[in-house]
Image (cartoon, rainbow, N blue to C red; front, side, top):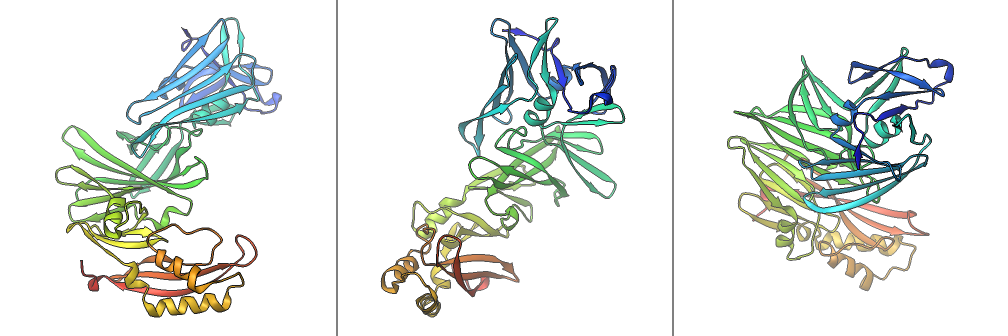
Amino acid sequence: MKKLIAALCLSLALLLPTAAWAANVPIYFRGYLTTTGLERNGAIYLSQRALFESMALEVGYTEASQKINLTFSDQSLLNSGQLDMQVGSRDADYNRSYYDHGEGPFTDHAWFYLEHVPFVKDGLVYLPIRFVAEEVLGCNVEWKDGAVYIDLPYATYTDGEDTYSLCLASGHFFRNGELLARLNLPGYANCHNLAVTGGLQVRRTEGGAYLLQAEGRDTSGLTKNLRWYAWLQPTADGYSSQTAYISTLQSADWLPGVVQSPGQVWLNDGGQVLCLDEASGQVQTFDQNSWLQQTLGNDTAAGYLQWTDGHLALLGDTDGYALWDMQAKRGVDLTPLLLTDAVRTQAEEYLRTEATVDFRPDTDFAYYWEGLGKQHLAVGDVYPYLHFLGEEAGRLQFELRCHYHTSGLGDAGQAVYPLTIELTQIQF
């Protein structure tokens, strides 16, 4: 394979009217004038290796088959990808290998139909820059004031006199233009299933570390909301960092992500909880599902971290809830404390009188009631389920929702009963 990084020319196909273009159009990359573009059939082409090098890309071309190959490999993120194109073809194939919460590697594949095909002229290979830069690498390509501007995607946050920026493609984190560190982002660019998209927030801990939060998406299967967190601690030789993320079909707002306790920071990393010691910089990892399973006596139980104050952690979801003491390392099943005989009588009476589907209290209701906290519920059935609302003044607020379907999925009736647990009354 012959390397053509230095000679590779890129087609800047911006789909603007031909009259708007001319030869020697200035091309800016990351704010600096790098070269001028050459007009060809209403589009601008340029030769610019800095774009690929800055994104850790390697470009290859096989002359015999006229196949073009763009690859990246990022050891810090344990991700790798490959984009394959061919001269004269509108097909582009993207393959990726990645890790998710330390598990994998997993692979996925995407196929693209190109509006502007690669071609060879005078021994040079030309590629459509809008496709490569925007759709594959996540760069911003803009036509403004007679010039073309190519930039990496950034999220910014301003706090007083300080301006923070995070490159969403590379993970480089800046304060007032000074590079502080490179952080591990979930995903690498727009065509990946996992990607941070913006909404950056930055705050400081009592120990002087930075706490970052950003929003994103997870498009593997059903599209999910993603929230990413980072803890960046100053050290004698720079910074050390720890990152985490969670994704859910619902808004990630209701899931705790960053919790501070004296000398410690807790990050929610989906199925794990990370405890960061600000004095020593040590990181402890806990499996929250094992906490839930130990408390409920069910080795298949799984759920979200719903709430924590750095000492107690509420675990579970609609199947039931457990409160775990992270210092004493033991938990309490909250389900029987919430679902008393009086609450059961109310719920059963409601479903008996209101549900228009075939309702059998001695079988259906008894089955689901006893199963709360021990099984997943089937969509479309008549069932009661618990829902956590939040914590306020030392009280955990729940609702028992009694749900039934009438004529197909989504057409339902529901009754809600408020339930409360006083934290001071819990005996571990």
